[in-house]
Length: 214
Image (tube, rainbow, N blue to C red; front, side):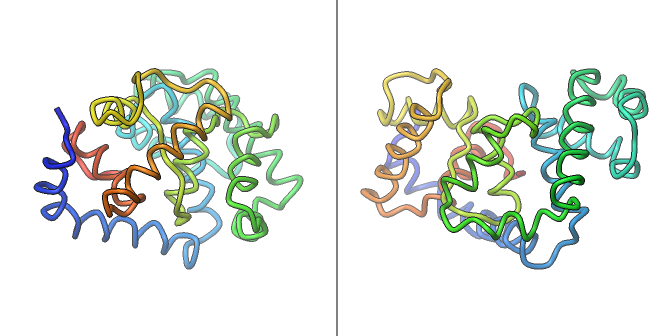
């Protein structure tokens, strides 16, 4: 069972690796190619309802053909390595074609065009032409390309928040308002206890999975 005391004892051991990982994320929005930024979006589409490891395996299977592959080609490459080859192939192709037609698949200027962090996430979580992303996945994508201040409320984080008494249940939020309510409670907890919010998100995830991944 997690406690504030146990966090204070364990966090110093993991902080250097966590800070390094956050630095790698920030380097993406600063220096990575547009292809890499889009790959991070696809990774987050793949992680929905699965796991980070399965998302990475799926991305690895399709990375070389992502810019132009048809649904059929993506589906064929995902067979046997991914849980949802059919629906996620559709999501990726629809999202890619929409972003290509509207923004030339140039995500960096699009991401940087938002002055309001909430509007940035809403664009990806609520846009009917960006398939497969809810608030959790949109937050995951934004964190992974270098934006701070977003909680990734997956089952591991939600369980931690429940154990810490931050929430009254580990149930996943099913609306924008509920997501933000839980996220704000999490932020208040980190502020009260002197923790860095973004570091804490990765730390709690690692406490349940044993890994500092992404």
